[in-house]
Each structure stands twice: as C-alpha cells, then as structure tokens.
Length: 321
Image (tube, rainbow, N blue to C red; front, side):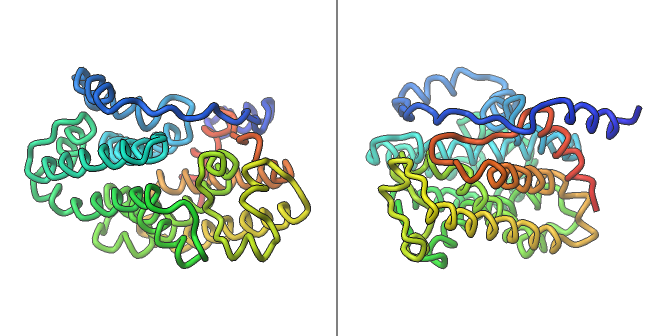
C-alpha cells in the first residue's frame, strides 16, 4: 500500500474535525520570567520547534513538507512570528506589550549586528548562514514586528483597505520571508507569496473570530459589519443570527477565493519549492470548508482538523498540481 493510499484509508476511518471549547482567557507571562525561561534553553532548534510547531499542529505538518535542509530556518521564522504574536495578543496590559516590543526591537538590532541573545534569534542567525543574509532579511523582520504592533494600537478596522495594511504586514510579509527561504528565485518571491500570506491570515481571522472578539480585537471591517447589521456586541456575546451567518458566508467565501487565486499565481518553477506554503493553504481551505459545514458556529468554539487529517491534507496539498 502506498503512502497516499494509507493516508486516504486512515482519514476515512476518523472524524473530519473536532470542535474545541473556547480557550480560557489569556494570561500574560511577566517579562522577567519570559527572559529567564528562554535564557536557560541551550538548544535553540528545539526551542523553535516547541514554540512554532508542536506535534499535531498545522505548522508541524506543513513544515515537514519543506526540504529537510531548510526546515530549521523555516521553523525559526515561524517561531519568531509566534514570539511576536504572543507579545501583543497574550498580554493583557498594553504597557507590558510595548515593553516587550521594545525588547524585541533591541534584540533584532543585535541580530543584525551579529549578537543575538534569544534562542529564536540565534537560530535565525545560524540558519541564514551569513551576516549579509541576515541584513537582507532584516527589513522584512522589522516590518513583521511593526505589523504585530498594530494590535496594540488598533482593535478595529474601518474598511477592508485599512485591514489589508495589517494583513500585509503580518501575513503577506511573513509568507514572503518563508517563500524566500526555499525559492529558486528569492528576489521574485514577494510578488506571489505576499497575496497568499494575506489570504492565509484572512482565513485565520475567520477561524479565530470568536476568540479574538472576546479579547477585544475584531478583524471584520466596521463597514462590512454595518452592511450585514451585525454589531461588536453580537460577536462578544456569541449571538448567532441570520445576519451573522450571511456575514460569515461572505467572509469565508472571500478568504477561500483569495487563497485559491494566490495558489494559482505561484509560478510553475516554484511550486515544488513552496510545499510548506501550499500545505498551509490546503489546510486553511479544508478548515474553511468545515466551518461552512458546521454552519459558521465559530463564536463559542474553535473548529480544528484532526491530526491525521492534517497530515493527509498537508501531504496532498504540497504535491498536488
């Protein structure tokens, strides 16, 4: 039996998805404790793996589709993104969040100067391999941090063009970083990777709508909520209605169409090099399908694919076409 046949048979025998209760409120880790824990870790690759891609996660299966030699670099970049995300989204006090961001600004400067201290920064420096390679990616990493900083400055977006600034800084810019890590022509990667990254983040906003709303962030533009007659209070209070379902149908369709369009734009010469991004796209599309099948009930729960199904979808999505 081939690997594909095994995975198909295996996934047919298991549930398609699981509904997870909404997570408990996030509790921020004090900054000095965060530094003490990370400083004690010697193996920076192991730290990055635990931070970015624990076993069973979508990122774990997507990273396994990349060339083995490039997996450590990609894992480090995903870990950096996770560090930034935790800094702003899992911090209840904006002042603490800004203190942590200021620390990361200094750490990134140290990375650029060849003196990183954090395990993730050390991993990136080691796997990029040269001071010039770090310098080449430094502006993109700075842009990524600035994108997450928007979460401390802004919790709502007036319209889609305003939201797209966030999607670009956090999603598009990061996808370009990942794409350049394995691309045949890194200099051209941004033109097709950025739209895919924006689309993936747009899908994430659909998946995490309920949890984000309860933590004071709503990534559905205000004018679109007004168009569908849905209020922020409806989302925070988990109020389902026909208006909400209509709005979610629109949001899901837009995210799906954006991913499909961006996937088709990856050059044929780069499709084999971009198996991680293509796997993530396949996983996002499958999750949107399950949310749609479940009737868009995302306010009180988070719908997630089962690990075996993630494995199958990531493997197939990375190789299809």
